[in-house]
Length: 573
Image (cartoon, rainbow, N blue to C red):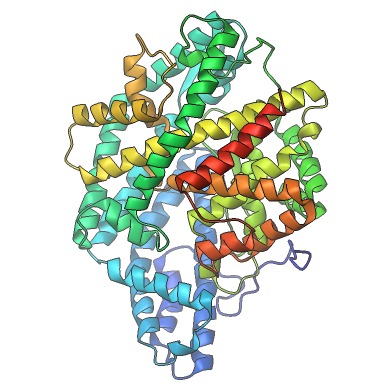
């Protein structure tokens, strides 16, 4: 880990050092060079792969910065146009030539020298990409990208007025922590009513996306988009049936715990009916926890907490701040959500989020900080393909960091009782997250298995799945329309379909990592870092094994990890 130089930027050997991407014509000569080159020796092949990876790094970074600027300011037409230009005027030209390059690699007589596990994984992914590529899908995916970004601009402009102040929905959600139940209910209804005001637009957008995705899948020879995505996402380690098994395990092993937690909450609050606006407030009616004052304070405290875990981990966030690679505070016109965007040429990623001061925002920051650490630990891997992480590996980094950093949340909460309260809230939220992930994942499977569904069928299926994984103690009477449309708040459904069950898989892994570190701090932490440093040079199972854990989502395994979390929760009472 100490061998990683955070400041070391990728040195260009193939692409001119002063080259800036302006349009396709400026890029084309580099691709033409790669297409025309003779791969007539082992060295020629390895040099070609290195040059190809370098060009990919330049492209990924340019695309990344255009996306970052656009999401930081969705109202800026220049940023919108720059991003749209890339996906409509540059990317469509890249896709067919990338397919040519894939074919060139697969046909190379010297490819047998690529016999490391990392190279076998690379070749397997290239074979997948070549298998599903269809030139007629280029226009479909371009249109799809243009439609997907509409979600952020639509939702990012939403605001409500509470106590005479106009604020983003993220900031308004802080009112759900208020001890006055009337205030909570008013805020909840205002937020959900604002969401409902755009439900028809989002329904239309979603149906258009479903249609485009189904068309792309069928043109690639697949029965449905779900099956297409499992190949596209290189899900070699599990199948859709394994996902269904996972759903069953969550239903049997986790949902009962959720029912117990919600029943306790109902009794502690002394309410006749537990309502959606009762889920965030402290059960002892204590004032909401405040984790930090503003983005600057959040940054300082995160660096301190990470440094206590390991000095290098704190250094990563410190250097990101110095480079201006943090945009943390919520504001109007900013896209919703949070992300860590890898920048393969710079080597130092960018963290984006919408912080308003609560514990949830703290968790988002350390979560994205885990992704950032992962990006930096893998920055020196020689090929971009080794850094293109599967979600199951990527989310292990972030979700583990939530729990590992929690051991040092005294930086955010000096009062011991507040610290215990924050830890307990987070552990309960982890348990609550697993059924929600199963809900969204099961919903997606049904949607793409039934792409011609009506809006009424979609709503009926959503309510059915939501009830399967939801708490039986939560009363939605009079809120049926809110409940029927809350799936629309899940960005993944619109922008990154099928990227969600990985959160649950990685959450189990994160609990196991945390357990290891609690039992043997030095060894457990080193195993975690060693696993992350592999990037995607090993299979998911091998990465998990290196991290000292199992890639397993059986009922028995989930039960054992839930027992561990419950014991930790009992220790906080």
